Image (cartoon, rainbow, N blue to C red; front, side, top):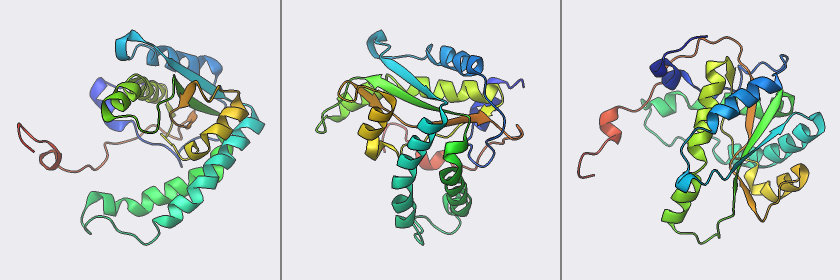
Length: 214
């Protein structure tokens, strides 16, 4: 699958219902994508990222249980709420996004692989914005590069964070040194069912870009 840079950037979606739960994902393909991710910029060239790849069925089931534990009350909290106007693109997509999220919750343990991106260090709860931005800025570009690399090879993922309220339990499950390493998410990884992803509806550029003054 050959995509030019603009196609790659505009069609890398959060994939849930179209994850192929039956097709195995080769270790070599995940390692190719992670090798590309390691070329992303990182603060002071620290390269403090670590990547936990999980393929063991029991470990996947354990992570999926942690995810479900926090997904259910989170999704219930938003039932019946409409945050935007009727004609807002976010309102028009709300039901589809909710349905997709529920599907992933029900099938998370079945994905061929899960990836937990981590960063060496742990911020105090009272950390200021500058330090937080610097910390996460040393990992998040690499995670996005990983998702782009997956897409270019016919795979997909979704950036999920709902296991993180139980991050310590996840660390114990996977042997991650909790006091020294911070998890940034939980990514299902699978080949996609079809590759015909399209640009998504987004708010107009004029609504979100500010020149010189807000």
